[in-house]
Length: 145
Image 1: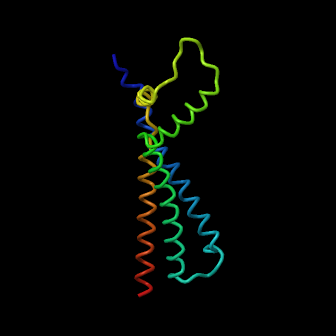
Image 2: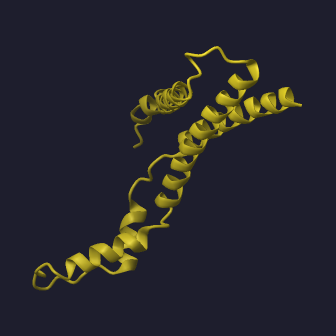
């Protein structure tokens, strides 16, 4: 029997991941703007558009790249490296009698049974910051012409 109420609170709070990622991105963009002096100096509209474009683009690239890295990692891109290190370390441990070392196939099967780490929210928020950076870049380029 399936308990449908057990997964309901998870779906209701799925937006929290997006909100937290957006908040982190907004703080990163604000810190980039602050480091460039966008809050303290009297800037022209063109300079402000340049700083906004840079801040949103850099933030978007970082968040999007983090999401992409999680995506390729959860789909097994780095499993061979993890397995190799664990296997090499197991060679130095004392083996229990009658127990064999786990093969790579068994390792992959064990990983496939685990729940995957979510990453779509990072990709979506990163893409949103990239789009905002592109809009500010187009505004800057339009003002520069």
